[in-house]
Image (cartoon, rainbow, N blue to C red; front, side, top):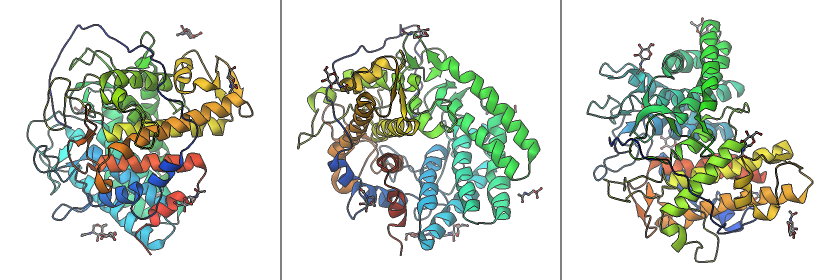
Amino acid sequence: MKLLLLLGYGVLPSVAQSTPPRTVPQGLASDITTYLATSAGSQTTLSKQFMFANINVPGAANGTVIAAQSYTAPNYAYNWVRDASLTMDVVQQLYAAATLQTAKNNYSSMLFAYANARVTEQNDPNLQTGLGEPKFNLDNSVFTGPWGRPQNDGPATAAITLMEFATTYIKYGGSEDDINKSIYLGPVKTDLLFVAANWSSPSFDIWEEESSTHFYNHLVSHKALSMGASFAATMGDSETSTTLSAAASAVAQTLPSFWDESRAIIDFQIGPVQKDKTSYQDIAVILGIIHGYNNDGIYSYSNDQVLSTAYHLCLSFQQTYPIATSQTVDNNGGALGIPIGRYPEDVYNGDGTSPNGGNPWFLATAAMAELFYRAASEINDAKTLTVTNTSLAFYNYFAPNANLTVTQYASSTANFVTAVASLEGWGDAFMRLIKFHGGQSGHLSEEYDRNTGYETGAADLTWSYASVLTAALARAELSGNSSYAGALANLGFS
Ligand SMILES: *[C@@H]1O[C@H](CO)[C@@H](O)[C@H](O)[C@H]1NC(C)=O
Ligand SMILES: *[C@@H]1O[C@H](CO)[C@@H](O)[C@H](O)[C@H]1NC(C)=O
Ligand SMILES: *[C@@H]1O[C@H](CO)[C@@H](O)[C@H](O)[C@H]1NC(C)=O
Ligand SMILES: *[C@@H]1O[C@H](CO)[C@@H](O)[C@H](O)[C@H]1NC(C)=O
Ligand SMILES: *[C@@H]1O[C@H](CO)[C@@H](O)[C@H](O)[C@H]1NC(C)=O
Ligand SMILES: *[C@@H]1O[C@H](CO)[C@@H](O)[C@H](O)[C@H]1NC(C)=O
Ligand SMILES: *[C@@H]1O[C@H](CO)[C@@H](O)[C@H](O)[C@H]1NC(C)=O
């Protein structure tokens, strides 16, 4: 979150080389099923409770989300557009899953309040860079101090969250007129037209550090614009629909240019090296897939370039963090996945910077788990596993027992079954890191220390909880548990 501006040019890129796999876990594990159950005291139950404790905190404007109730060292007591949109996205997923009317009503009024709060932000008289203004005070007036502006992913993810909600609301028989007025003609159309006009402009990244051309921003813009084209049409606004549809196609055409054949990764940005990020690797690419995949086959979870990126990121973090080699199993011998942070060169330690100060983050670790769960689901649904020369290294590392080569495997083959079980096992191994390093009573801060594994950084980071919940929902979907999401959504209501 902390703003840093350090520029460095001209260092040669590097990509970590393969090391032998540290573990070969198979299938979803019962300890993680228990950890993520919807029973009292589970991590999921507590994550939900702690996430909601950061929505509408006392004294804050209705519909806002505090990034963390951390007022000093670091001060995260602001309503960030990005964090709020990702948190409210969990709320809309709970709205969609809830079966109790009391729960549904609670979530929907929270989401309408969020839409109103977004309108307030858009109309603030002191915006400095338009709708890409990243951060607001808790009374929802704009933060006017020096900061990395604009951050143009915010309008896209805010619109995605509200369009998902609107679509479900109408599906459940809610008034189309209410959605038209409060959601579409409220904040969504304005944000979408901004994205259509500004998706190609330079923007700061999700870590608020570098102004450049970012894969994350492009992918979430693409999803917002594609969804927006249909949504605008549903709202009877064909002119806007046409504008959004054209912009969506234009963004889609730029996406292949992020693929970096020599490093075999999707570069997180296109542009000169900044902040010594010579590896061109950043978990922002994986977060982009999770927040920006539009279910249209364009950069899906099991895409070979995405998997290759995940593989190289994992290898780099394996070499970056001392705990990756000193703590490979938990107290019961359960395999711990590779600790995942923002990027290998990170020096932000949760409050300031220090040499080799960057730590693994809970939200980054949960995102890697979620990618593995979603990739496994996608492969199951396709009933075919296609291995290309681009994804082969990923599968050889994470699924060595599947004996894969560059070909296609039907779901009836042992290779297919073993490969999917390996992805499941690794997804759980990443979640087990959160279980092992997470704090007492389910509290999750931003980071866990690269040397000791102890929690560090802002306490009770809202996004940490949101990321555990979306990973848990993805895992339940993978396991075929269709009652899980509803049970989670109904918790606390009767
Ligand atoms: C939703 O439920 C929570 C927890 O019971 C409660 O604090 C909050 O006031 C409710 N909000 C609305 C809008 O109903
Ligand atoms: C917040 O806004 C929602 C939706 O408009 C409304 O139902 C709720 O009562 C408001 N809460 C407060 C405390 O004003
Ligand atoms: C967004 O696009 C509009 C229209 O092209 C332009 O005037 C504005 O400067 C852009 N804003 C940003 C933040 O890029
Ligand atoms: C939404 O409102 C606009 C402006 O009043 C109107 O033209 C349009 O038909 C409405 N759409 C729906 C679906 O109600
Ligand atoms: C993979 O195959 C493609 C298409 O045949 C080829 O262009 C590329 O160089 C190959 N990459 C590797 C790493 O072998
Ligand atoms: C992979 O090869 C080993 C050694 O030949 C064999 O024991 C194992 O059954 C194979 N696995 C699959 C999934 O074919
Ligand atoms: C599915 O999830 C629900 C809610 O957590 C749980 O009660 C149930 O036992 C789960 N089913 C299976 C087969 O794990």
